[in-house]
Image 1: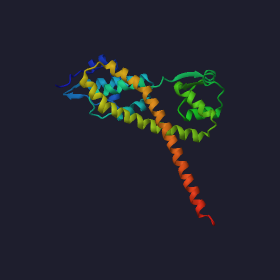
Image 2: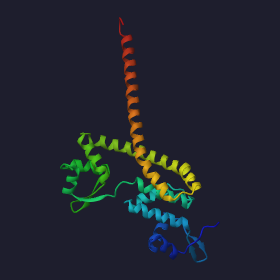
Image 3: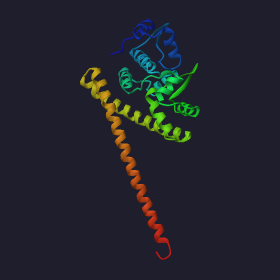
Image 4: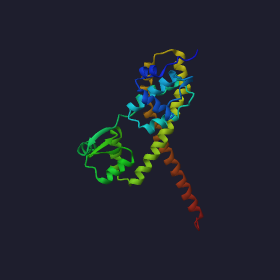
Length: 247
């Protein structure tokens, strides 16, 4: 069956997004072009699903550039159900929205006075951003991690390098898990006819399990790396010993 079509006014009413904003998103390539019939333009549930996803991303503090990047990873021919899946998976995994704090509030939240170099490192890590008038935009969920990195005494470049490693591997894991849900969980969900709330609850319960599994896998990998390193050192020491005169 053909998807029901809407006029621009109907799309605006259903989505709550102003006409000017819809046209702006379309011009930026964030929405597909409308269907043209003569001088009339029509929209489908695909446009509505993408608008709802944009509003969800905005609610979580995504910048326009970040929203464009996120949408670019969704195939242009993705079905509305697939786009709805992105909305379903998004909210339970998002960190808290950034907070605006004064300098004293930031120091209090950090548990100590933050120096200029501390603020510079936290800014490089994407945790703290100056907001003008002595105030800061702070990713509250990450602040304690950033302060812990500072307290370790790591050089700033080492802290940034570690952050880049976490980010790169975190993105790879997120992409693979999203693909898992898209290709295996979502089809089973559609066939079962279960209510959307049940999928959302399952995703929320899956998050702590995933974190625990990642920690366990990381610990196992570290132990395996240490074992292999020790074995290589032992083998090298034996080789050096056997090559010495009189050995």
